[in-house]
Length: 179
Image (cartoon, rainbow, N blue to C red; front, top):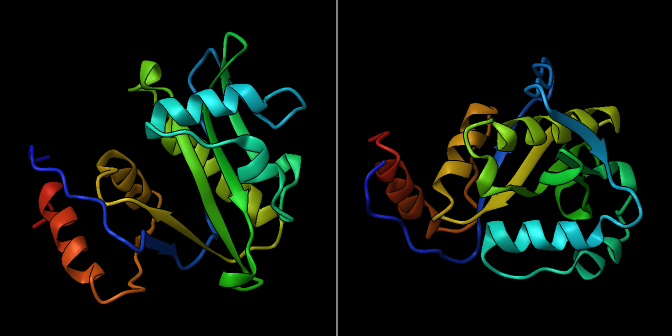
């Protein structure tokens, strides 16, 4: 990747995966385990999200208050009883009945190199399939280059929702060395 990092733009970039068939299995390294939300995880989620996104979100206001909240839709990876990655298998009326949303993906910087972002995202996609989704979308920011690379590996492609996004995606591709 080049040292230039694209500036965030609005609206957020959108990526879509047309089909959710034939997903690979989730394969966590030894010492990591996958689970869904349990009462009491709220604070750990807030801390992980703040660490990853460099801004604060509140679990109660961001997820719990949403009518699409279900504990099995909020997934975690733990290591030594510490939450080190999260992703949500979300829904929204905006994208249609057969489309799920990969939402709020975060992995602890201290655990880089263990493919946690990829594996937790894959686990969320499997949850979407269990709920009947055939397609998936996500929203991301221009400067989240490692996350965007992970989303490409998961089969997501850019989905333009605003005319300004063509140039923004071109900048992202350049930064990733794809152009």
